[in-house]
Amino acid sequence: MKILAIESSCDETACAVVEDGVTELVSVVASSKDFHEKTGGVVPEVASRKQLEFIFPVLERTIEDYREKMGYSGKEEAIASIDALAVTVGPGLIGSLVVGVTAAKTLAMSWKKPLIPVNHLVGHIYANFIGGHTEITFPAVCLLVSGGHTDLVLMKGHGDLTYLGGTVDDAAGESFDKVARMMGISRYLGGAVLSKKALECKEQGAAKLFPRPMLDQDNYDFSFSGLKTAVKRYLDSGERDVSSTAREFEEAVVEVLTAKTMKAVNNFGVKSLLVGGGVSANNRLRESLKSETEKAGVKLFIPEPRLCTDNAVYIASAAYFNNVTKDLSDIRAEPSLNIMGLI
Ligand SMILES: Nc1ncnc2c1ncn2[C@@H]1O[C@H](COP(=O)(O)OP(=O)(O)OP(=O)(O)O)[C@@H](O)[C@H]1O
Ligand SMILES: [Mg+2]
Image 1 (cartoon, rainbow, N blue to C red):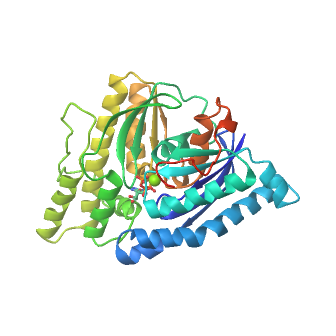
Image 2 (spheres, rainbow, N blue to C red):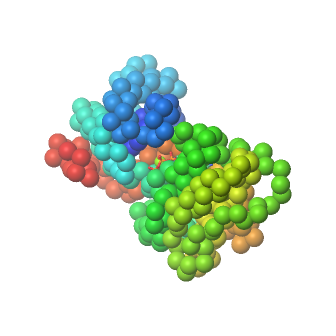
Image 3 (cartoon, rainbow, N blue to C red):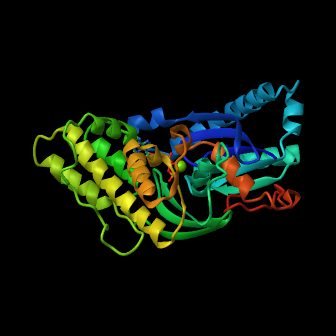
């Protein structure tokens, strides 16, 4: 089954075609992040206007790339071969979401194809299924670490997710971004820049300058706001070395994320850990989870870095796995279809 998916929850406008939830046929991503660099964060109005600007070129590019890749002679033949559409319906910025949802509904109606609504965060988890990881076993623990969310979820199967805990304030990605801005190394989306700086630190092992919030609490919750404040106080109190501050901060985040995740893995006795979201591109986090899961005899799945941040490939995968056993003719983009109140 071939699904064409659209993702427009924030500042990426993305479209992809994926076969049977695992084979990426084409993927196109346009981003307005350069515009948010100037303002040091997303201005929702700017993001939604950019979505409007990008949505048609992204759709056209996707269909043309797909036609070419599959060897179809024309656009009509390519479109006819698509079985269903999928679209991110939340969470995200409402002005951005509306653009993708409206485009998807319009196409579903004119092409007369089913339209599958997908939760963006569930999508992040499904990035692990791209390429066909048949060795993923259920129940699995999922760590979702993105720009806006940090959650631990127990996945007993497709469509069977239980929230275990999550951040009570900032998301891990948000704290990376804000600390990078405080350090003056990036104005927007500084996670990867901060991580690169941390690599330049010559000292072996972290000196534990910063707190490990909620580490000792018997739950699956996180807090990153106080850690961010601790870094601010440290930076304000004297001349500080950028690379060692970056390293100390990164170590604190990675230690807490690893410990709470492994607690869930052990307590639920799972054999698979699935990680998703932009922060899962972080090398230190990847190393730390690799080493702990190896010790525990648990299989670790982390998407390749390009699939960690927002794209439509994982939206198509989530749509497939959560609907493959259903009769898709029931899911029609009727004008009355109310997707998360977005009509
Ligand atoms: N190598 C890295 N190290 C740390 N953080 C990173 C790295 N690469 C990306 N990030 C962070 O990932 C986040 C972006 O991820 P993602 O695109 O999944 O978030 P989002 O879509 O904005 O949020 P959400 O998915 O919660 O709606 C940013 O906070 C960014 O700094
Ligand atoms: Mg995201």
